[in-house]
Length: 237
Image (cartoon, rainbow, N blue to C red):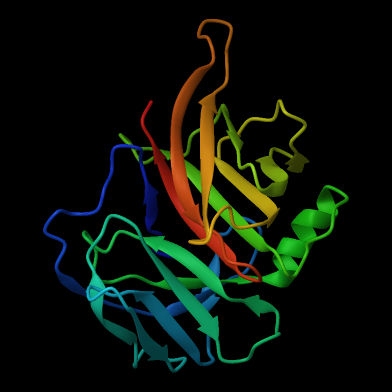
């Protein structure tokens, strides 16, 4: 299982005294549609993150646990979108952005998402993935307990499709879908909302027999064309 960062909650902001940090760890390849099971990525890759100086910082991964990547000069913020670019461009593993709380952690295993896995999810809802668009994989967890949150309806304005993990596979949102016990949604074929490549995700707690629907926060997610974004969103309920 990969060590996942967080896209934060509506109350989280970068540290006021951010400073400079270092990240180190391995690069993994996610092997199925749970986006949890992973194996070591045995080939080379380039790691990038927002640097404390305002410019991106980079490091290399050589494919071995005996030689972890070491990324210095990292901006210490609540959400740093760290990217992994496989050395072989155009293969099954796609450039992947991961939310990392660099103000809290220094050791993080980063992930690469498989195009084959994503295509299987699109196939399950009779849709097609656009290789030129961004794809976004989000887990929704309780900010208090860290547990996955069921019963949420989530929207992303620039996403062509919202695909919810369901008990028997995947469900294409018709406007009424809600997260199941995994709290997992794939937003497909997403276009960046602005020049910074940031897209807003709006979360609503669905109504139940005893509780009315309620707003549960709005969150910013990095979207990059031709790449995948993966993050855990911490929701205050």
